Image 1 (cartoon, rainbow, N blue to C red):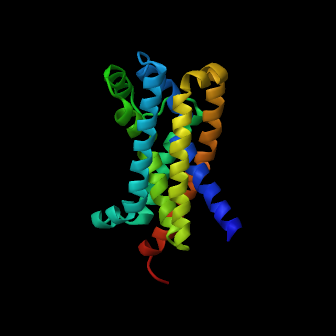
Image 2 (cartoon, helix red, strand yellow):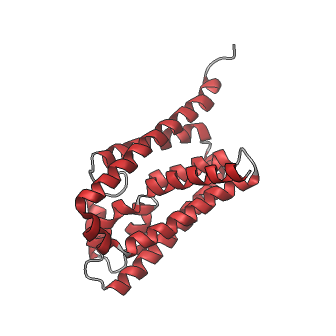
Length: 217
């Protein structure tokens, strides 16, 4: 049980952390908080990370119920989520700002706002369509097993929120140490992993959905 718990925790944490990808948010964070002092930046990072974690936890717990209410099957959502993740991952591999995560208009609007912690930092930069899709699918998988499987997903969300705060709070130092080249390498590595996650989501959705579409043999 301990080995299974560790394995599930590692899978959930790696998938959620790499799709949230706080390192990719560092340049945007620095632009939006360029007129703020260190204390203000830490406060903004804390509120953004907490809000993102709360949003992801809410969708993880209630996402499947919402989709059932709307008549959307989990299989269809897995395929759709996989497509969104794939688009995001391809942009990450190409080290291009992904419109799936945030647009230039949102960045410019955020730079002019007095408070950017909730919008656009928490949403959609950290808790965007890709990360929401990821936690919903992971929670759906977890509910197929023991009750504590779901706890690993929620725990991974909490750890990701904490790590996001550390990354954003130290954004200026991280950019100095890693530079644009180091951040680009991290983004490419995360993008490669997300491609595999996206393909797996789509395969799972097809396996679950095709039997409903094909006539019984």
